[in-house]
Image 1 (tube, rainbow, N blue to C red):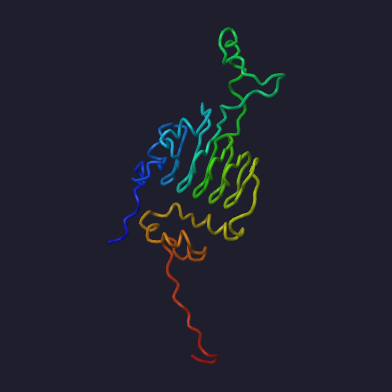
Image 2: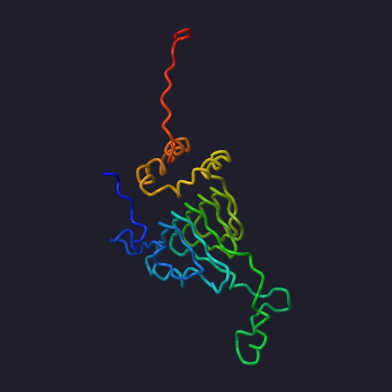
Length: 228
């Protein structure tokens, strides 16, 4: 029998740990897209992710999160609805106070935004990370606990601080190109299941050798000079 993959449709992948939820079966908003196996960990109420962790989300910009992402407690996304006008003497949103001020609602609608907020695949967002509107976080990136991400994060970058700055890259540029081409997060689940140890602890060479459709390379045997 081939190994059985995990189930991406269950809400609680660890039944004895209700603090951990898979976001794909939880999310209902059409403005949020989440890939399979991406999880959120929160001891208070992880099922309230849409209301407690995605803030000021009035649209039309989307929050898009890839597959196999790990979101620690307190990760928050501040969406474009949090913006205020900054081109006049005051930033205060008078029209939301009601009364005759509401006649000027056009002054706070249609504010320029940065587009969708996008988190790639295999991204780890540490405890208390805040991601600002329109930011794009690349595949394989790591964001340190407490960071405030105000600008794009490169693939396999490690960032930290407020504002978050690039600390290092997890791999060389050449290996990052190889990893992006391999895109293990898109492998069929049975194949991924069979090669989990390689994905978690192997080298890029190992991953390349394990890729779907890759034919094993036969070993070469050296012979003494002049031998046939």
